[in-house]
Image 1: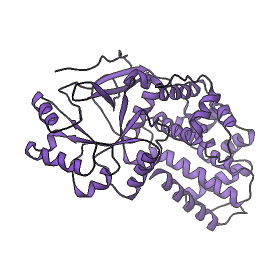
Image 2: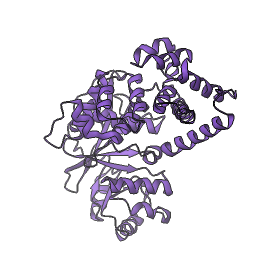
Image 3: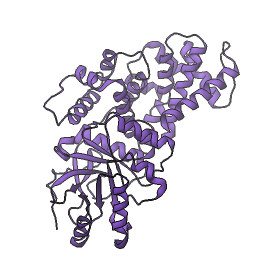
Image 4: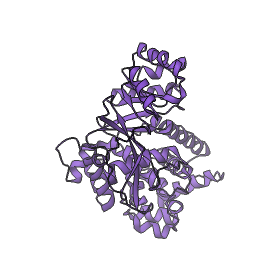
Length: 411
């Protein structure tokens, strides 16, 4: 049996194209209810996932900024798998709550951080689904927050299925989705037991959709992300940063219009787009762009180092009573751009429209900015040689503060 909706045509080059797999979810009457979006790295209909966080970020960005949510799902909702890091890192606020269903994967344990993150998403209006769910008493806290529970049909013996579904109903589950349905018999059994939604190869195998990808300059994304750390930044300043990169501007406009595709409102200016997104959602989007823009061979630890270095520079600037501590954060963040881009810093500088004192600090560690940056780099190497005005104790305290900060935003 095949009830697959026709997929848009696909292109060819994985390096130049964005790919997303989609698999429809059906009602008992075989009407399409929604689509689950799946990571694909090329036209081959299989996932080759080495980094779950990066895979999910790719699915989201490919959907919203390159292909378009309306192209992939039309007026239907999109089911999107979440990793624990993306869930607890609170980086999902850029997603339109009325267009997506967030799936909590089966390997995510319901600890305090996970439950708190889910509670926050529910309060923001997101629909939560539990993926590949097999009932265990310790998972009941998850059930209380879920709108949809997906039961993986083959994992539940047929003779236990009625009790399994009955227990979920007794716990208040409103919508049960039977997945991995592969035969007419499977479908009829799950339908007779009162399942509400259905998904599996019996209906339709995943289809791959692609579109030409818009490449974004990593330096532009890093600069945007660093500037968004400034609590006093204005929307006009954000707009000014984004408009220095045409591709970044295009991606933002594409994202906003894709996320609002269910409405008749079209956003046609950066001012409108940045205002509609707001600082928090822009931070979320920028973090996903950064995650997917870095060469896959580059360790994510390098990004973590950059953020810790930036925060440490900022903290030391506060201790030294320097003006504009936020600039020191930006400096520390940008100081690893040579490693990220595989270019000497002399070639990186022209990519970033920075003030002369920032350039001098990055190139030759000159001035107050350069002095603090060098002290942090020395500390990383185990050389306790801070500037005269700072003590070894202040260096250690700044480092510990930075570690606590990075843990609070990434765990």
